Image (cartoon, rainbow, N blue to C red):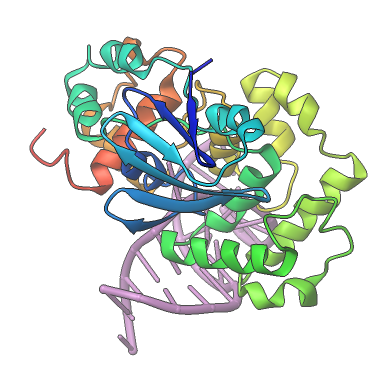
Length: 268
DNA sequence: TTCCAGGCGTATC
DNA sequence: GATACGCATGGA
């Protein structure tokens, strides 16, 4: 477990291969905002956090010590991303992506929050996804569990302005609460079975399922393909991913996704 | 005005 | 099983 010190209510730790801006702004989480050059404010579930970075040194502001394991898990502090990047860098395109997106970590997000968030993400753009999620959290005082959303209907959620996605959210909540979708069973199932379970929800297809498995269940072999990753695959990997991605296709995807969106693979 | 956004459901073949 | 199209909303 990563060591830390405390200083007047703040928690301080060091971590290599961790860049807040890259990690929190690469499309895996939608509840963080940069408040200055090195500080982010955000939330997970009902927990709020302000975190700043100075090189490899990080400060969690006004954070109870007993919450540190939660945040250490969320930011995946005990995984060696230096080694992961070394493995992926056997491939030339991935090496460039890893260099450009250095410090990206795969967040360990809560399954329900991830599933609902990526239902909202479909055929949508990131600023608007963030807005819809912010309004949802505004209604419930934090990101709600399916149980807390029990009884919600179209009118409850109309302030979200989520469009056609509203009925998908309601179907998801209903299936979780009724037990038709068992997220514990999803976490135990093999990848394809887990995806099939998630896809029983209206509005959850293969892309949302894979994002949920990657970001919400830390299934690093899940490989979501959206419009951006279609371009990456067509241009660089028409015959499939290189073997160095075996088992960590999703992490490779995250570096590639960030790099292609930022235009960093143009001359690759 | 038209197109697009971390897609998916449905109809049609 | 493959492909075409509609879908709510809002920014470019």
